[in-house]
Amino acid sequence: MTKHSLTVYSMPVFMNGIAFLPASRSAMSVGRNSMGGGDALFYGAAILITGNIVMKLSNTPRLFTAVFAAIMVGAVTFAQPALAQDAKPAAAKPAPAAKPAPKKRLSYAQVSAATAPIADAYFAAYIAHGWDTLEPLLAEGASFQDPTATHIFGKVLSEGREAMMKRFRVSYAGISHMEFTNNRRLISGETALYEGVLHWGSDIGGGTIIDSVTPMVVLISVKNGKVISHHDYVDYSPFIAAVKKARSKKAGK
Image (tube, rainbow, N blue to C red; front, side):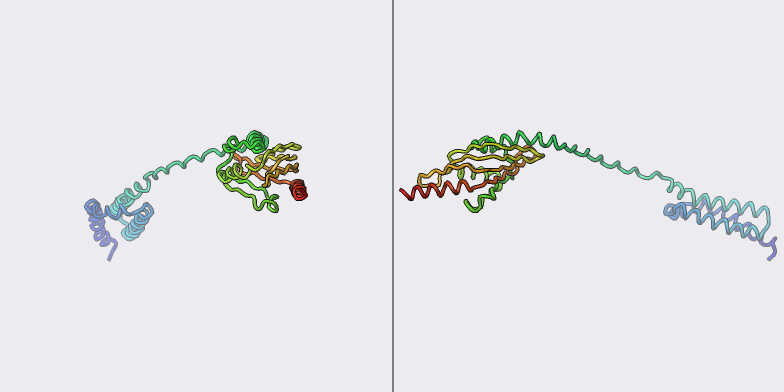
């Protein structure tokens, strides 16, 4: 086949292709809609390469013009909807929720200053047996413990405000009086310490009242304006000595 015959043969083919493109737009719409920009460019490149081969074989200006027109129509037809689809703006992402501002941490001095009045009021009510004054100062989950009393009175532990108030109102009913001589008061952060001597009287039954003076340390912890723990530490040696003395005196009678 000569170049002339190739030109004669190729011209109708490409002209028919150009005429066919508008008619086939609806048929190609499905492919275009599912095609990304990268696919459109790929097919456009394929059309360009094929057209280039034909033009080199034909070397005819009229055929070159027809082929170039067919290439451009094909490239635009395939690429336009795909590129338009790629150009759609991405959906705006919702702005992240603002984080709450961190709670300002109180200084040591501020915490100690807040602890002092609560602990002082509680301790004063405890020594005075002012249970109605003491109860509102207790946290619901507060606890009371005297680990130094285990060998004398058994385990002394009350957990929860209700249990504490029952102990104070019932068990402390046998204590005739309590006076505390404070030798040292220390407030440090959430903790209050009271060190001194407790002068107290206890009814041990049979009409016997034991009066004793015992060294004592009380630790009170405060959180969020409420007492959360109360620990007594007592040197019970003077109390035990007073009990023995009272019993010996009673036995001698």
